[in-house]
Length: 98
Image (tube, rainbow, N blue to C red; front, side, top):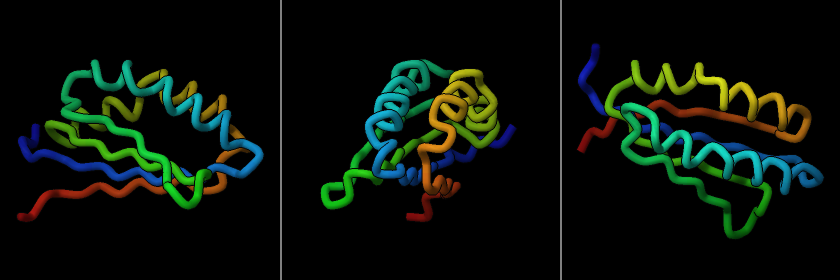
């Protein structure tokens, strides 16, 4: 198992009519994810100028533990609940270099 810490930046752009649904479903993910093995931080942000734009800033002990997170039921439930309400979902896997 890799011991390198992994940073995730996940950008979620909700459709205007789906913004409140997406926001409420994203908020449901926080406590359960923060309790997962390997989660260092899991912080949700909403853009100050575009209220439809959300960003998760996450740090994980390693990629393998993040992959377990990505396959958990609560993420599948989120995707099902927000089907059709999200315009764009982009995940960036990053490693700190300095």
